[in-house]
Image: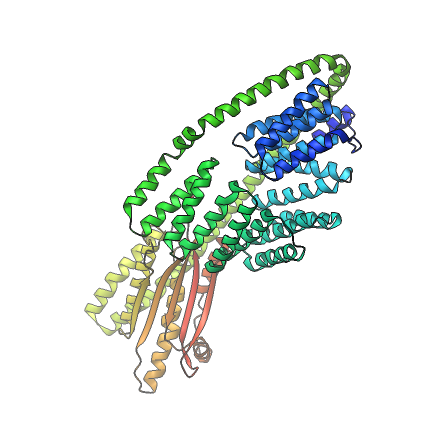
Amino acid sequence: MFIRLLFYLQFILGVNFTYSQTLDESKPDWDKTKTFLMHHNYLQAIDLCNKKINLSIVNNNTLDHSLFLGLKGVAYLDTINADSGKFFLEKALAEAYSLKYDKSIFNSLQGLGKYHYRNCSYKTSIKYFQLLNYYSVTNSDVGFQLISNYYLSANYNLLKNYPLSVVYARKASYTALQTKDTISYIKSILAIGTQYFALGNSDSSEFYCALANNFYDKYSVKNPGLGADINNSFLKTQIQKKDYDKGIYYGRLAVADCIKDNNAPSLNIFYDNLAICFSSKKMYDSAVFYYEKALEIETTYNYVDEYKEDLKELVKIYKAVNDPGKAMFYMQKYIDADSLYKQTNVDVVDSLKNAFEQEKNKLTLRSEENKLKELYTQKQKYYLLIGVLSLLFSFLFFYLFYTRYKIRKEKEKQNLLIKIQETEIKALQAQINPHFIFNSLNSILEYIRKSEKEEAILYLTKFSKLMRMVLEASNKRSTLLMDEIELLSLYMDLENFRFGNNFKCETEIEKGLDVHNIEIPFMIIQPFLENAILHGLQNKFSLMRESDQNFSGKVHLSFKQKDKYILCTIEDNGIGRAKAEEIKKNKLFSHKSMGMRITQDRLDLLGQNKCKIEFIDLKDEKSNPAGTKVEILIPIIEEF
């Protein structure tokens, strides 16, 4: 909508952007300013722009005024007063539109896109670079096409829209090939690698980093800033692959290139990544050294957020090495960070604000003079513009109203689907509980039939506790992991009683696993545990008894946490799946177990497409069946 509005304005005001205007007398100063910016000499660039702006006012040269006002804004973007840069760029863009001066329009759009990109307003940044891309394509300006495609790729990457990011990165690389711009081509290849890094595909990311590095070496590119970016991409990829030794190697190369490029403001990025490598290798002295180097850069350039993050990492390191004094020292620095930065930069900020206000007043006076001169000639255009804007705003209002209506209807539909899913899950739970109760009652009946009074009482006591837990949890969406483990232990005890205590039950819980606060779906594990006992162990007991051999059965149950999932492993030393299936087929009457199928259906309804149930057939040294292992990846239920 933003882009369409500017297109309408272009049509109404008669703005026809062409790339015909050139100011040969201003080209040397333009090139000189761009050189200052390339080498990060921002104060020199601002000083030269101020001279050109003052000269343009004296000579009434509106084209130069718009052009160097925009360049001044670009220079301010890399200082601590970037908002001043935004102000100058918006002024320059307004003047450029009125003058139909495309060179200044392109420069201002590029600068405003970069401002919003650096301030994390990625959607607004995309709008400016889409406009820049449209006008540069219209005027066949491949240079600005390259810039716009590159930044569109970067913006979509940060919005995690990786397919679009790759599309624009590839467009940038094609444009760079057209212009034979080796540096931009290398940057585009590196951007494609960045997308794969964000997707967690470290091998593809490393491939494109290596490709960029090959071109860098092949054409003997003398651009240490680009070399630093390549080595830093290698560094991040090695961190992702946990190859910290290689990461340290590339990190040191990146630091060396950055120093050669005289780009001190970016050094903290490389220092931080090096510190991560050393910290991961538990080489804490080296990690502290690089974090402190990063803090020096962040203090100098007022990088408040990065400064705080590095302080937190230092606190973690000193906690790890059991140095509470140092940990408390850096924690206090973290608390005082805001006031510290305000105190150290107050003089610089005040001076920049004063300069900004003076320039703002000059521009305001000049703007008022221009308005008075153009008032009569623009009067009719403004009336027409107001009418068109009214129509546009009416259309916009209707569009927003209709969009909100559609969103509300879609939300109602989604809520209905969620309720249906929850109802289906409850229905499946209702199918599991009777199946489990039926097997337990069979065990009690067996004791009563044998007239074993004490065993029957003990069994009934445990069974009643088990039934209470089942009934209490049956109407819940989830249960605590501790309660689920207790329920499974009761079940194993009951089955062991029923089969004459002829197998051992072991439960292993990963150290540090918070079983009292983690919730999982109810009765997910029990059907698999039942299958291990009834079809694995008991079938093997029967075969061993027939051949007068002894057999010590064993069921091992373990729990570990993997990100937002619990990995439950059930391992038995029973007869194995193949033999159990063969015995089942030979039986005249066999019960068709529904528990495991229902469990899979429940996981599917919960929408956890990453959940898995894997069966592993265990073998002994002679490749004979030695039991079965089942791994179940269960989602941790989070409350919203």
